[in-house]
Length: 362
Image (tube, rainbow, N blue to C red; front, side):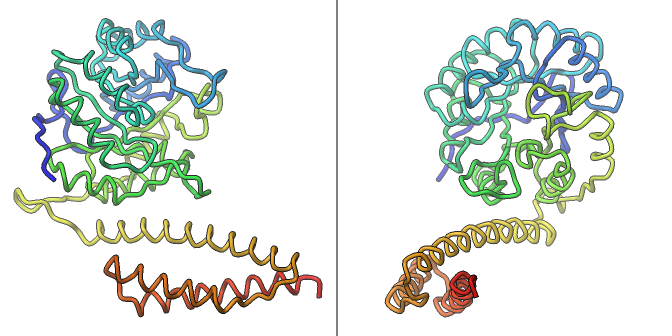
């Protein structure tokens, strides 16, 4: 599928944004003092683009939803005092107008907004006629077409300096991540729109400050263009998302330890062995999470059989599962014999698990 996008390289006045792009700052601008001091420390460590949440869309009412417009003059002071560019999230036309009025340099559209085409269109209409970089986060759920649709809407409003932010995807399954990275999705976005910069948000993917370095390295190894990292002068006292923020000094240490590999030969992209292995590692992580979920269900089945005095092995069900998996393997182009061998081992482990439940009283 082709995409008729009119894109220009990401840039800010006097600065073209080149890999690795770094955008950092607190999840939320809480007070003028906290905002300015965080900006001062980040600027002293070489950060050029400062992010801060002014309006915070939250899951439930009553949570801290940002200070609102009163925080925008604080960002203006950040610019004046440190020389940094400032970036905020917008979710409505009013947010756009207010941010532009106070000289915000870059905007981003959040995951919840991206998931709603009507909301994206409202923001896009408010941006018409502006020359400002806009970053678009992936939608909450893993829907690549919805993500691309949001990018198209903003571009059709005349915005040419566009980037994507990969912040992971929500899942009902419990995994090590706050939001599953599902790297194949942004990789496919890059394949479809090669000239679209993609910035990774390891803070929201991991949900824990301890995961930021490894996720950042993975993003760089996969040849993405930059990082959006939440940084706060006192993370443990942050009013929102305390667990996933790092101090400016910790951020400097993370960046100093990152390895930035050459991804090109001449002017042709190179897919490195490391990139391919990183993709394998990511997919294997998802497979293990799914196997864990499957075994948890198998345990519940074993408990049900124990409570209702039902035998473990149900031959008809086993045959049904194996036949279905063989058909599914053929449909998706996998070797059916390979898939059957995998499921034989899975079934053996499930039987063992249920057998342990049956014999727990012995």
